[in-house]
Image (cartoon, rainbow, N blue to C red; front, side, top):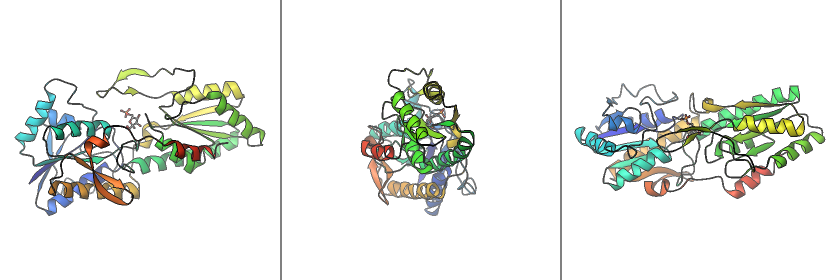
Length: 340
Ligand code: F6P
């Protein structure tokens, strides 16, 4: 048996844990394991590296991915899908493990439908992939954002300021909702709900009228405001996503203007994606890697490993990539209970 692996999309803590877990289990079965560099680009350009036991040792705790990553979409450019299929053939691959989020696994799903023996592993700090309770990387991002909110609390308190903290999350506010709850943010704003700036300012004013001298506002980068069109960078990636950023500053300016409270903004950005994975993400990544090998053994192609309760079960890639998993209304209702 010979299997390949790739990591695609935005990197995330835990990728190396998956590579190591799948690789070590495959080696125990005497399978040959190879990796393709930089996501789907590695299969388009045929850039392969052997994943020997030596190549995957000492990587469990390391952030990022030893395989590199990119947002390459082979369905975007004429001829690239053929190149992917050809690379598959040239290396005589019996299976490919694709570790990615909705975009990377969307490509995996299409290729599996075309007959390639592919299994998926759900990755993204955003936790917005359907058919799995959690993706690995999310827990680490939440813990980083929570720690930043804790730190902002002390400086906000000392200076009597409103602190706006911009958190990643393009379409889904999972990181913001969890980190906001865990960090005790006074207002938590997510992309699933159109934001009314007057309402936000009212919450802050009422809180300060009760004697509080500072406030923390956690806002997802993908939030939209009622009545304001915040311009984002025009540049689109291969999957058609705009580059986000800047919502925190817009919000901070509006809050300061309307409340007269001194307001500062902190953009967490890629800090949330860098560094070592938490124990939870290392364990989840390891379980996913192990079960990806089991799926291959069972020839259950076109599926991804997914977390359901505390069990790892197979989920069809088609279902997992057919729509995003957003923060449900009732969850956000609970988050809102602790505003102000
Ligand atoms: O998909 C994960 C993510 O971190 C999003 O939260 C964010 O919008 C995006 O990637 C940023 O992408 P890039 O690293 O390409 O700027």
